[in-house]
Image (tube, rainbow, N blue to C red; front, side, top):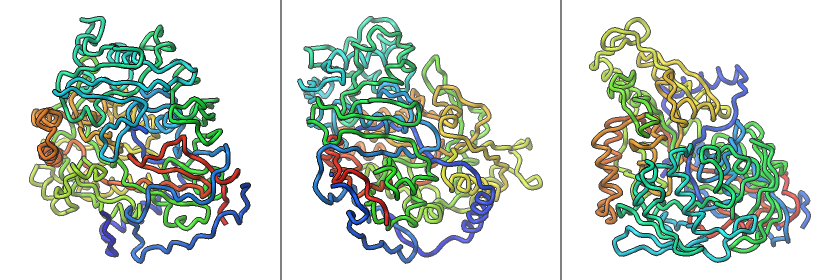
Length: 618
């Protein structure tokens, strides 16, 4: 996957080093990491001699690492003690927002909190297909349109009330309510029989959802689709006995979501310091069995302190580890590093329209500043992401080519190489399209000034140098690009996560965690609020529709459809991918029964420790 190479591009190396020197000299306080909204699922007293010595991992000869060198399952060292507590570090430069309910959350930091105390009713296997091993089981009708779902009898909310079919129905009713202020209402919901009529106020109930009993629900969809088996069935209930009498418009901001959230997962929320920390206690009534740990403490930590926290045992594990810090810390004696290909990519996005909140859809603007595909194509050719991955991330992030990452190997088109770095070609494209040089920078084809506003997220020591590299690369082909660094929450507000597009933003550097299902409509469809470039085309509409059609149950047919879609996005370039990435997770050696990634069969209630206190680095 990641080829090691000792050759570095001089054309990239100089601006990278200049950017790094300028940034470090300025002693910037920007910390944290590029992050993204991303929907997700689901032990003797220590002494310094308690941890066996580890042979230091020598750096590869070329300084590059490969994700293939990592395991995603922790090695167990020692026997589990009874009970115990661990500390989980949420690595971020901003507080978590605190929308702690799967039906309403929008940012990855909140999902990291949610994972400890709540979960979906259905689980996935390694191929991202629903199984019958979760809190609920399912059966599908012969035509593939009707799902009969049964919640296990021992699945209860943390307050002891049973999780019911009414709760599952209620989640659909809230998301389908016109007052709903979350990001979930999309084509997966409009595909439910009667949902559109309910949403528009033409019906008081959703005709396609029927409660068959306390624990049994039937959902009928308009169209059968392979996506229904890989994430298309919404499987997060909402406690009706808590939220049933609440104004839908007020649920997401309620204390029941932000201060005392409830779930049915392995741990209960004991206390919250908003945005900073959460203390969880074990849920003795958890449906899979009583958790091995007594307590989990989650705390937000900054990238600048994550290494020290791990060395001293201030945290036992983190949600992710900065890839740029791995080489200097690969041989820490108290840690084991897990790794997996992340279901994610970073990208450069171009604002091509606006969001129509009333209509709930994207409205492209043909007069957008970034509307000329030649301009966007030149900007992609101007950057060398292969060298970015090597210089900044030591091979643990690598050049991205299409918008379906290799975390979905059945559908990622490895034959599509995207647009290669070629500065001369970038200049030629701009020349041929009429973007003429006027002094230092180019003008628009009509002779007017072209000034491009670019925003990127604050992050660790390399966040600003990386953004500066992109700016310098674009300036090198005559484009007047101005950079603004913005913290996580403000960044997504400005690019449109609330439905309001900041008109001062022309280009942005973002990141997406992709869903379990390969269908990209939730990020790029006309009705997707997360379609931040506000891109739409008839050709994409056709492909997205075909990708979830009955014909697409044939994997080869679906592969062909998404191959076409990847080609279309390389041609139209509403965004261009920059880097695929490894997720690297350091874990204290006392931690037992832990894994990252999907389909491992290892769950959080099994998490244990071999000693009371964390192992400290020697």
